[in-house]
Image (cartoon, rainbow, N blue to C red; front, top):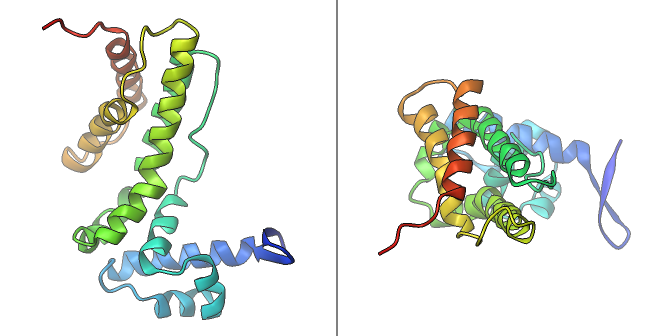
Length: 196
C-alpha cells in the first residue's frame, strides 16, 4: 500500500485518502452539502474517525478537498511562452469544470456557508490565481507583455466564459470553444489599455 509522509515517523495512506475523498463525493451526490455528515463519510469509506480527522478536521475542508480531487492535476506550468502557458491553464480550467459539473448542484446548500466558500477558494481559486500571476510575470520578463495585469481579474476572463457555457447555457465545452476562448484571452492580454 502506498503512503505519503505527514510528519516525523508518520505516514499517510494514499489508499485511505482516496477512499475518504471518494466516499465524500458519493455522499455529497446523494445527500447534498447540508445533509452530508462526516459520520456517513466514515461509514462509507470504512475508516476510523481518527483517520479522517487527522487529514481533514472540518466538514468544509473535507468537501473542498473532495471537489478539488476531481481534477487534481497541477495548474503550475512553464512551457516557455505566454501562449503555451495560457493554453495549459485554459485546458486545466475546462477539464476541471467538466469533471466537477455533476457535483455543483450538490453544493448549493453550502452557498451560505462562509467556511465552505473560503475552503473552496483556498483549494480551487487561489492556486489558479498564483499560477496565472507567475505566467504573466514570466511573460513580462520575456518581453511578451509590457506589464503584468492583475491575475485575479484575468482569471475571471478565463473561468467566466467556461462557467457560463456549462452552468448557464448547459452546453458542452467543445474543443472549438476552448480554442476560441484561448484565442480571445491571448488577444485581450496583448491589447493596450484604453486611454482616459
